[in-house]
Length: 114
Image (cartoon, rainbow, N blue to C red; front, side, top):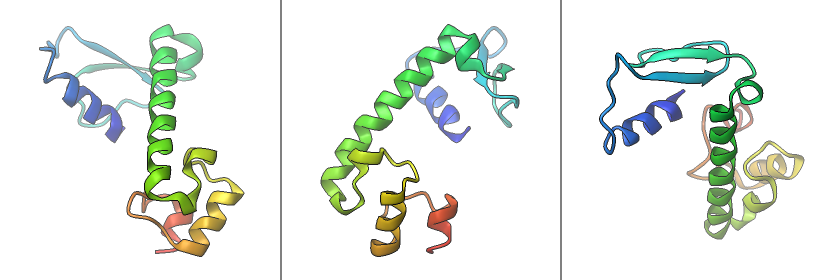
């Protein structure tokens, strides 16, 4: 949800949103707390809404590209191979090298190493 808030915040720099007239489709069962727009949570949204499906694909491609870039700075973690998912290789790299500065400390396997 933090990512959604950041994305809308950045987008708001370019587009003037009317909070009363804007409806945000949320992929999942819950509304985003402290979010200024009307929301429609949709369980399984990427299978029911073309907008959510496209946003999901776009986000995955951006993330995969970002992981390929991070591979250059942190080759020991093999980000280009697993794209940051908790694969066996990734978890073993975390145990061997510890978390890098870009690892999310709230992610359970990382949290257990900190």
